[in-house]
Length: 113
Length: 112
Image 1 (tube, rainbow over the protein chains, first blue to last red):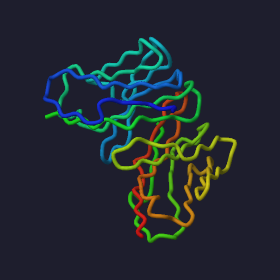
Image 2: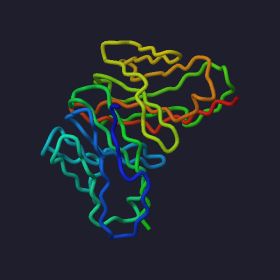
Image 3: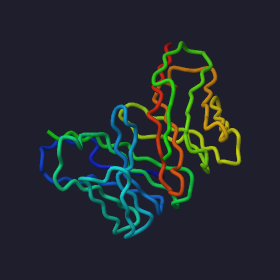
Image 4: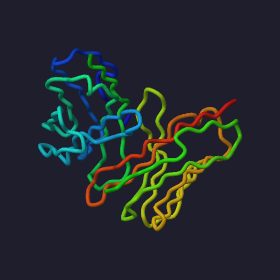
């Protein structure tokens, strides 16, 4: 089944403790991105990747890192999480950057205390 | 800068009603627009995608229209059902990039 898989689905952590949210897609898509969703602010893009080893900042990249060593995986790294990073995170992929339809993961609800 | 607005923010209707969700965008130089559905605690599912050369797209009881000149898209849901209860989001590409800008969504509740 074609899908985008995120792990974990739920995470509660403490300020400053490094964490990684994984994202994997099995559709051989080139374009992958991370979003965070906050009440009243909608979905905002954090980082995106046009292909392997090609990543760039989105609208709200501060406090986040990403890597794209393989086509299928696009992990989101929070080196020193803070409470303002408490949010619902989504990973998404598209076959190519200019392909229209996007596929989304199930989301990761992160709480930083 | 592209801005996307969805009205109303929330909507509650009795089962069987036909309803219209609105999406407005400020930059009409778009090459497509997508409507998504989001269920609580779940990801986004693409419902309809309209390319700039099209005026509307239909899938089952859903029909989406696009009027680039006025910066508007509407999602029409016919004969609404309780299973249609979800948040509906529209998204347009940010001019000159491959990034999508999302509206804040319309939270729909269809009452049985």
